[in-house]
Image (cartoon, rainbow, N blue to C red; front, side):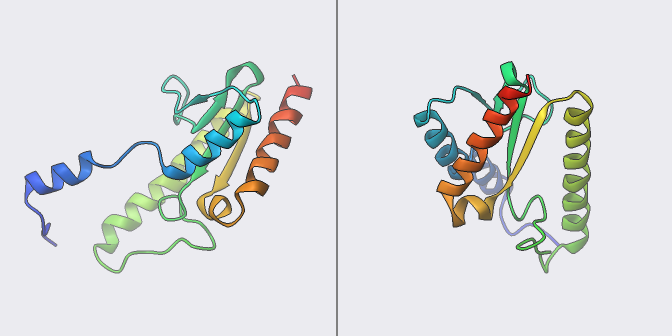
Amino acid sequence: MADVMTKEQRRKNMRAIKSVSKLESLVSKELWKKGYRFRRNSKNLKGKPDISIKKHRVVIFIDSCFFHVCPTHGNMPKTNREFWKEKLDRNIERDREINHYYENRRWNLLRIWEHEVRDDLDQVITNISDFIEASKRND
């Protein structure tokens, strides 16, 4: 299927996409208020975790329900199915590789679904706080 946009329109559209989502910003802001200090999207860590605390070997990923194929909300687009199936399958495989990478290096890894943040931000912040505190105790 041909693209309905010109190359210049597509380029402008793609450049407008931000690498940090609003949900990441919400979570980061709340964690910062609670006194946690961390890095966002660390390029020198595998998979560029959304939140990382190297001192405690903590990485946190906030996964989009669509792009990471949430079991509850993930769906396959009706158009260009072959492209999307390949892309989404590769995303799932990459997530597994990243999980394996951090687990083998004894890092503390937490994945959060986009819908969890949307449904109950306070509970997500509590869960992340508990996770970080447990990671600190395991140092």
